[in-house]
Image (cartoon, rainbow, N blue to C red; front, side):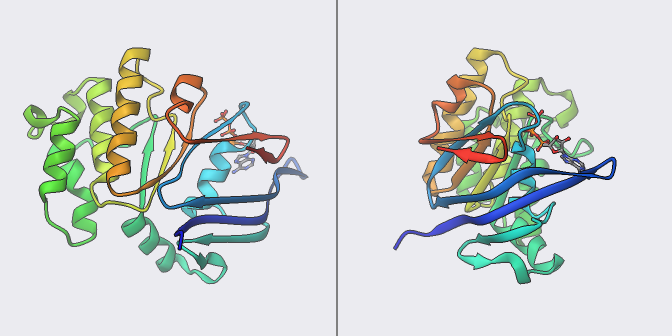
Length: 222
Ligand SMILES: Nc1ncnc2c1ncn2[C@@H]1O[C@H](COP(=O)(O)OP(=O)(O)OP(=O)(O)O)[C@@H](O)[C@H]1O
């Protein structure tokens, strides 16, 4: 049986702007199975971040049903959402969101600590694959953009999440570095069958994903 990681049924999301309701997502139907990798494209303002925020539980839909790991989230409370994010979700954003008071190793170990897990062979493998061996004791704010990006990727995968949500994960890198990081991201995520939903404006980055969802006028076209 295929593991269903994300399923949206007739999901609608509206925002009120200046007293006027604005429908960003319009009865969307989507299915993401274990190991699927999807590039999410669409014009600025088409609702890509809104879709990621719904799946991460930072926004709630107006109507429709959202299931995560084959579980209907409509009855989830804040604790249940936190548990999902802690155990099953990895995120990597353009701005890295690293913990600047901490060094590289402690940043990567952060999701492990939240889950009561220890640094293990998988972490060593992430560190070596991403070329971070010599940087573990360095404070993250002393690293280059590309190095910080690699730390963010290692951190997002350290706890072997079922789902990785990425928003322009290589947006700050030049094209060569960006494609190299994309290759590593896909390879490492694939080792534990982590599904990826990645927002990107780059066709070259989108080509690393198996599928493409394009958001336009509240609808997703595959
Ligand atoms: N909290 C909010 N309150 C009101 N409107 C919002 C809110 N969040 C998003 N929107 C609106 O929803 C629409 C979609 O925004 P969203 O950030 O999801 O687009 P996007 O496709 O990610 O854009 P970009 O590529 O520029 O990041 C926009 O019109 C935005 O103004």
